[in-house]
Image (cartoon, rainbow, N blue to C red; front, side, top):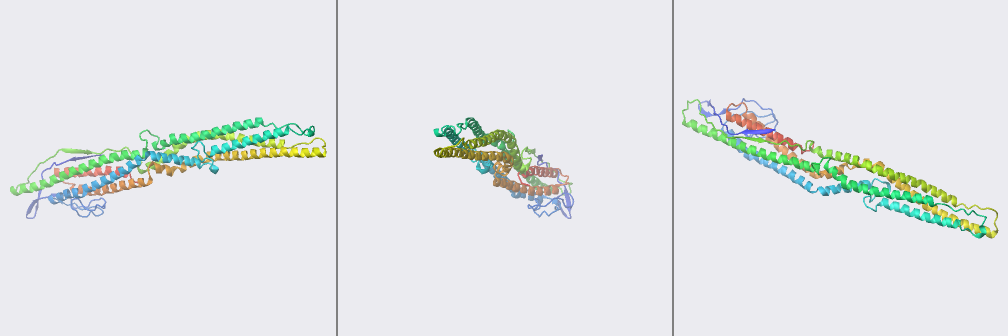
Length: 493
């Protein structure tokens, strides 16, 4: 919306008989009440009387009322506009401070995201997932060590089976347990499990370093820090528009002063002229000036921008990362489940090998040798089975942790919403910006109401100079409305 002020086109000033006293006076409209709301700026700029709720009465326009308008423009309106400028600058300073913290806020969100993944698994399985030696890697190393120890025990078991005392030859089976193929497959699956852990580590770091910044970007390439930078861009428009309105009112004040001087000059001219003349005429003009304000394309969703970008950020993060994570987890879970089955098979094979059947009858000394031999076999088998069962228990825990991550990850992203809002624009700073915009908007609203009274007072007058002043006043009201609406975009609710 453009404001236009064509200053100083002073037309002929009429006169009216007031009893025996002849003086110049312009009657503006009839004695009717206006229809606008009162505000905390509750005095008229032309009468300095209270603007009651529901409006004020029109007055006779003379030198006093015009001079009063000029004085109050400087004393009240321009001072308040400077206060508006202070609030705008405060909001700009806060926004600049948030902008300077951009990398800090990005790193905060990165840490929050890694913490989210760490808390997703049962038993703290994913603690340190963003590091090369996190809890998951340690757990897999523990499984690997148990498998190695179990394999060593099985080799000892096989050696014991194939080295029975000569006295027991023919009385016990010489067939030894065969575990090489099972352990080879187990080692292969543990290796796949390690690869899955490495992929999870790379996944978390990839998301942290590449997708987290996209949350701030908001799916567009205009701003790297979309919320804060859009605030800054919008405030740049407000700053320029406020300066334009300030200049418009400063020029308007000159126009008012010019009109007041014209009243004085007309009275002086009339005092020297023939009192019976119809009227004296003073024709004065100044160059017209345009005061266009810029429409801001930013902050169209007002202060909902932070919530909007948080929601959008979560959706984009989910869309980009959930498929990647699930592909890793599905492959890793397949390996884990196979590992569990092979572990159970290994336990069953060792348990079967622990049985030592006896063929025939032994002497007393032979029975003693057999008992010792059987005890040795059972001891080695029990040790191997204990290690395998412990490994299976840990593998089952890893599987539960992977399931937990797969199940919880999408909902945990949604739980990031408050943290994302906080890093997009600090909550206290956000409230402070709202307070600055709200205070400036309230001041503009007060001044707008006061100028509506001026428009009301100047309405329905045929003198060209007054009509020009009326138009200028109306355009100030319109520009204040645009500036106020732009300020409102920076307020909550």
